[in-house]
Amino acid sequence: MRADLIDIQVEDRGEEVEISLYGILGEYQLSAVREKLEMLVRGPGVFFFVNLQNARFTTDAYRSLFLEILNMVKQQKASLILIFDSEELQTYFERYRNIFEIYRSREEYRKSGLSKQAHLVGLHYEKRSISLSPGFAVSVALFLIGWAVTLFVIIVGQGREISDKQAQITVLESQKARYIREIDRLESAIGPMRKLGVVQDTTLLSSFGVIQDWVSYLEYLEKNRREK
Image 1 (cartoon, rainbow, N blue to C red):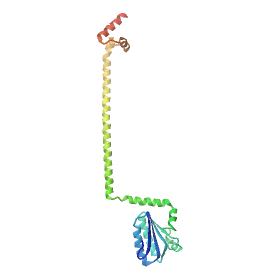
Image 2 (cartoon, helix red, strand yellow):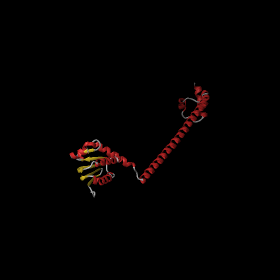
Image 3 (cartoon, rainbow, N blue to C red):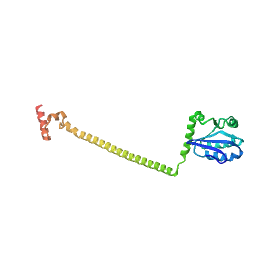
Image 4 (tube, rainbow, N blue to C red):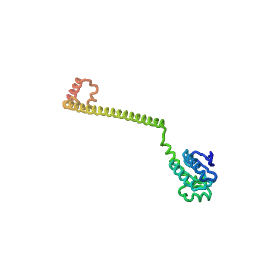
């Protein structure tokens, strides 16, 4: 891309955008350069490389311009890097070396710290992820509501199942207590019969064997008594 009054070329490589300025730039070209740079840095990109190797500035106003562009880029959580390897430009930006990131090439910048670039990319995507389209936001909201309703139904169902099992346990415990009371009652009733010799131990019952009624059982007891 080339401007009408100035020579600017742009190379877009995804997250990296290189803007190259050419020629002698003075007061006459300042407004056009400002307009183009502001337009370009508002576009997509995380790393904006401004290549000034083939540019020459005849006024100090461009230093203030690049300070303004730097502030714009920082507000976008991006990075502005000045690229040049010229003693004249080194002298021109000498007062601002602690403010601008200045490198001789893009390759030198990459070698300076890959972790720094990864951090900037992360911040950039974090910023982008905040803004959601209305349709997508509604879809996410409906999904979350459906998930919450499903979870509530599952919890309620499990709560009812637990309550039913607790009721069954209570019934069984009540039956157990009733059976124990019934056994105690029968034991109390059988006690006098044992004293009368009507009820014998299981050993005697096993020897009696084939007896099927109380009459035969009493005759068996009488026979045993006479034999003794």
